[in-house]
Image (tube, rainbow, N blue to C red; front, side):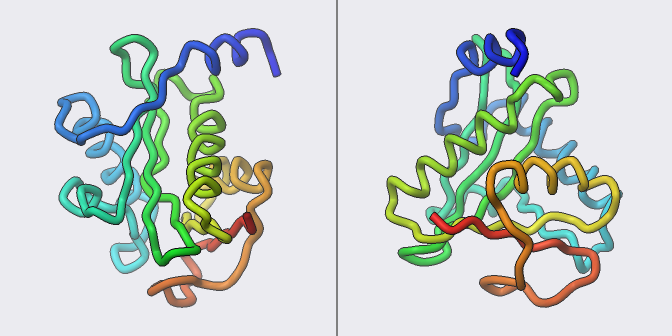
Length: 162
């Protein structure tokens, strides 16, 4: 890891976010727009603001001082299984370790909750390859659909045994 990435990891602050700030609303709007642009409508599983406010979802933002670097969420599927949702890095902060830092935080939180599995759905199009590589680097493996998902050629399902 470069010294710049190490600085990023120590300077970033991860905190539960109430999804009311204009910067997080704008980042999630960009996220939804890009997901829609890169996935067919019936294969786009990103959540909107109202869905992210569900009691079974914990949503975090990553900030450096007041600047928003990225976000992500953990959805409880059942007492032993969680799902990663809405992982996103602000365009101006990609490549700085924001997603890896947040992913490690979410995995730690899932373990602290006693989950035995952590899963996610991402797209299969080339646009999603960086996300697939990130999750694979952190031990996630491609597997079958989980929860209410069904087989879909536009989706990649990944799971990490905790």
